[in-house]
Length: 328
Image (cartoon, rainbow, N blue to C red; front, side, top):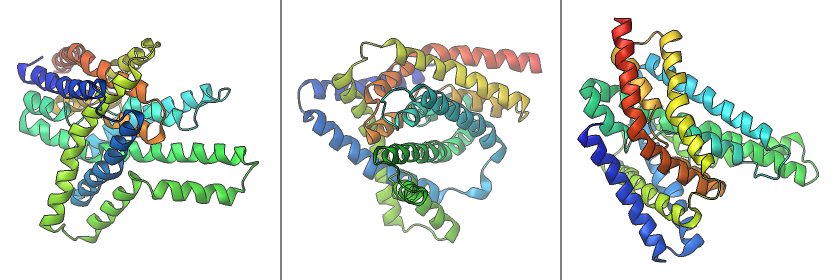
């Protein structure tokens, strides 16, 4: 663990601690204040970030093999988590969006606040370029499909509760709730702008960039506020196990896929595995707060996985160095 990375992790905990302290002092307005802050983050800052990312990324220059090696196992992992949780919750009265929320919590890595400085410090400019390519599609390819699944599950539950709506009504509800959504809609609009060949006017780009930058500190403060309201909970062992799955099992699956399926090695493999080994990102909490499900669990997993990353990151770097020597 380098000094630079340690200080970066310390900075994250300090900002989270500020949010916790503000909440303890009663300055957030309680549950209403938390909902207001999370709505601002999810309805204003995150859409601005997603639209700018998709509208300005160079689709032709993307390292598509690396992206496939990262997102294919990641999405399969998330879908497996969603399916498992959905099967377990069939006999309970859990919120229909719960499986999608937990899948995002187990999949979404902190690719910006931790990932960017980590890649720059360890892999230099070449590795950072590869990591930035992963970042550009991270929220798009993880939040969008699980948003669709959450909306489908909620529409089905609503149809059953109302005595059974027609298939057409259910599909119309799903489409409306999915497209007119603060994650999916800005992505679709950004891709449409990108494919049109137009460039963003400088002043609009500046506004969107400022909104995207605001998402990072707000998310960290929200984690602290959520920890004050929910704590680790009486079942703190569940978030701890989820953190272990994210830090150890997921990167192992990505590593195996990268080596055996996509035949990666060297720098691309290292960037790939370390991106999968990152702690849970703050967008997982925003996603949970969007559906008002599992906020306490998401905040606890974020904090525990971030702390645990200080131990698991050196372990994965050691494993990658051993593989490089064996492969060489």
